[in-house]
Image 1 (cartoon, helix red, strand yellow):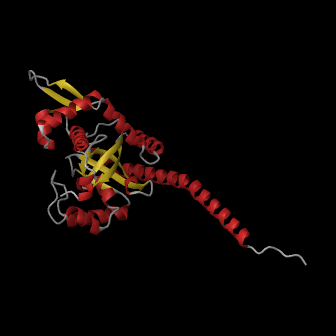
Image 2 (image 1 turned 180 degrees about the vertical axis):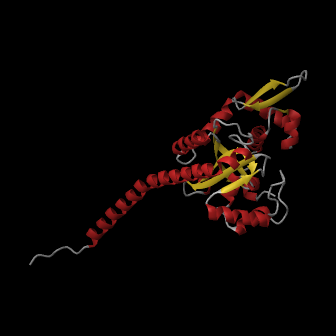
Image 3 (image 1 turned 90 degrees about the horizontal axis):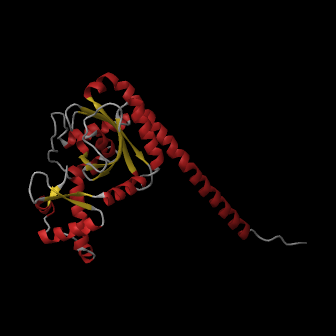
Length: 293
């Protein structure tokens, strides 16, 4: 149940628009009005009016559904891409992360990605394709279960066991393949290994034949500044290129950490300089004035 404070400032029309956009963003393709009603539970009239309003502002596109006479379906419009692009540009030191991600993809030929964690899911916010094909399960704006991905496990490893237990409880986790970790205690052991290694690994745990290596980077002081960075490949290439891929990932991690350290040093020096100047001024003001003979 919502708190009184949340209800006090609730705006039903805004909530409907937000839920509608999220439903379209998380769908695998265009959705009909009936599907949106089922997904969001809002009334037909409210959803229809909201779709029309969002359509006039470029957030939603209305199209004729192929093969179904008189039927319409809806997808995200170009204005939604503007919002997504603005979000990506707000990733902490985005330019450095993107250039390093691109270099990793070019060096290995594999697909490199950046994600954040939101509850039990990871949300992909950046992606660079390599020259090799890989099972495409992630894309920018896509959510995937944290417990079944290297990206998610790397991010989860930054939390303590108590926080992980509170997040998942004691019930069995969702299974995607025969390799998916479904026991919360087994997940905790896997996360402990990831902490010791400094990176997490995924072996056909979300999709059969897909492997992934991931590490994390605390790019700023806030919880939203915790980034996961991964390299995805096929199981066959992972077996052959295992050592080289691990080395490439660790080299990328060290390069980003060094860049982050360089960016923070000027700030720290500025703070130290300002603090020294302030202390000096205080010292001078509090120093007794010299009295002549």
